[in-house]
Length: 247
Image (cartoon, rainbow, N blue to C red; front, top):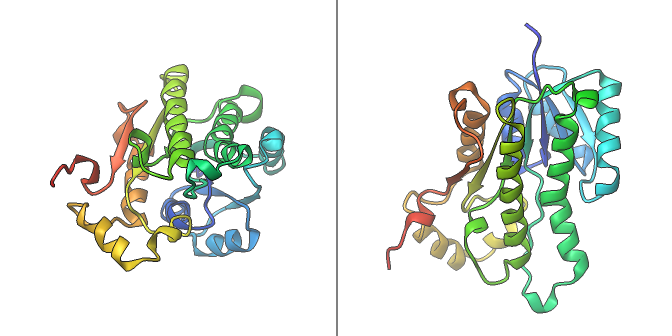
């Protein structure tokens, strides 16, 4: 039986890498990221298959559609699943935020997701093969935190996009978001330099801090037929953090 293809953005490290490795046992993976060396390293960790590297910087939103369409055409593939893991997370007090910072965050977190989904749901580009997509958001999407206005607003935008696309493409395509809590990755490493901060964070998570595997497992479930009646949903995977009102 011919293996289906999945496109995973931000798959050169962290959550995206974990998902790529896990799902490569059953799917061919299109690995996207900016660092081709890291992408090649992830490819070697994947199970045997016809995996493809899409070395593309998603902050360049002007050329995403053309680049992805060309990739699909050159490799003669159709994409069945899409996971948007690419992200841009830095903590900025509003007083130092510039337009360029906001634009880059929204380009990578939101606009690129919309344009990729546009290609993958297109008849001409992908023969409307897409069945399921998962956007990696954040539990900050529904809350507020100091210095998180850039990141939080972008993730809230991503979840708003998810809900509207889920309605637009139902019943053929299911689209959901996974909202991780505290997971240590290359992108969030800046938050894990202070042991006191780590301890304080961990104390607010009833199940402790999470791992990339915790997030990967949730994503694979949402992509699968076991989630066939789930669409347009924010699935929070944060060890109970956002349910914890303990003083």
